[in-house]
Length: 137
Image (cartoon, rainbow, N blue to C red; front, side, top):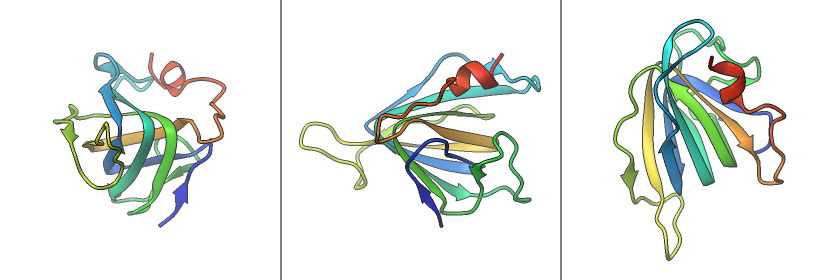
């Protein structure tokens, strides 16, 4: 289990759990450069993404620096990613991230491809190009 909290860092797997204070479906389903349809998602304000089911063959599909093993985790101010199945219900509550005014939200991405990347880390370092602009057509 590896935890990364600075850019560049990403996770890929069959299922990824997101815990954040602000999870949103970020736009309509879009094609990737490989013409697969994916469902974008963004997580802002104290976000964590953990692999809860890994690929059957541990080989990255999106980024060469993606972490692939069960339990691997990324944390940052802002995360962005997608999966090839529709994004399910975004739940409220839980124990991971909580303040007096706003409880956390959780959701699980699942599919043949699930990907999340740190866009902005805790030191406010951002990627040069937003992954949405780079990966989706």
